[in-house]
Image (tube, rainbow, N blue to C red; front, side, top):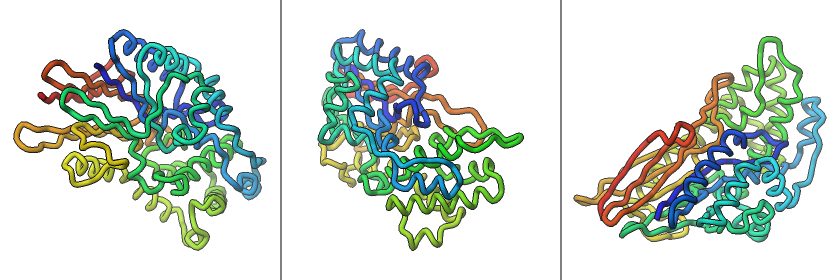
Length: 368
């Protein structure tokens, strides 16, 4: 049995800011699916945020946000979930075609994340079918046994207060970025000697970079008006209380985003605690020997040394979506993929970069 795992692809429909490009990343996914299909008893696990469904749901107050900035934006209702998935399929035919073909020959399992949590709820099965993925299975948390080892695979958002529930604020921020901030930036007249790449806003990691990037793109005076409009729409969508909004400055926003970006460190600390047995995993799966998460968009790899001769592994897969750390530099195009395999006496883990001819990032082996 070979287990292949990817996460955080963020496939979206055409009108939204895109972090996944079908002609490039979709083709690499098709290559991976073709390789998986060659083996016997292989499985592909899609570990959450494969689809950016929260981005397709408009927030409240978009028209008011536009009026405050003199930009013609409209309030729109959320389309039905099957329509969203069908539109994503139409915009990403290579990726979705490859997944559909693989699911007809091998096991493909989707573990919903915070951006595609809808697929684990009522109507999710029908929506996935609308994307042509009727053979893809849905599991809230995947547990696999390889030799005598337990492998637990979860998206990881349950440890993130902003995204653990739909009301945590993360979904509102995603909707505001896609339906208010990015359209506002796209509408702006070009600045002399300053190139604005609106889609970069949703790709920035760490997220605290949003503030200095916007300060560099927007003219003096416009930035201050933008902050006021942003706070107002966040209040309208209950992502920020009105009393707190009165006190927020760009410096305060930076500090809050910096705290949020410590998530990958907090996730790693909790994951190692789970391997040690001191931290319970969401959903109470069996104690893992290998714990695989996504969500943070940061690749992480840690080996826990237990009693003599015992090692346990934590992997965070990072993301396939384009990542930027500044206002103008090149995007990070790494496509981290995990392969778990076993022979008669050994479990092996291979983390590789699919964008660079399966270049090895990390390896791990443990005997049974």
